[in-house]
Image 1 (tube, helix red, strand yellow):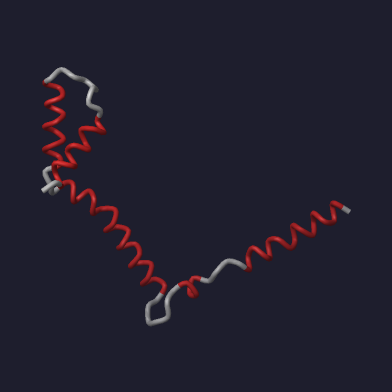
Image 2 (cartoon, helix red, strand yellow; image 1 turned 45 degrees about the vertical axis):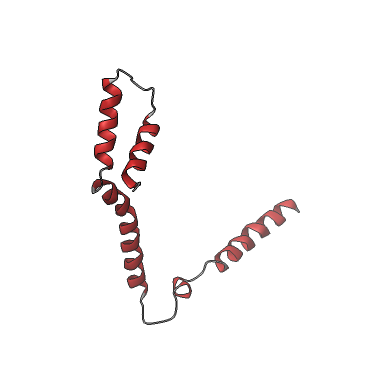
Length: 98
């Protein structure tokens, strides 16, 4: 009896799970946009969102502050007393505080 119940569950459950998978076209808003166009837009958006923080850090004075603070720490003879997290936080604060 248990074996029959187990076989019945293995047959019925995959069908129920496959019925819940939505079609990609049902997820897209109605209009003239195609699926591939939406995918390209999504990839472009993800690319911009991933590259933007790096560009923002590179074009500001954050790097100069971080290097100057690390030189100051080395000049004082301290190896890890102000943690790197503290130095980076201080450099970010000084960069974006106007």
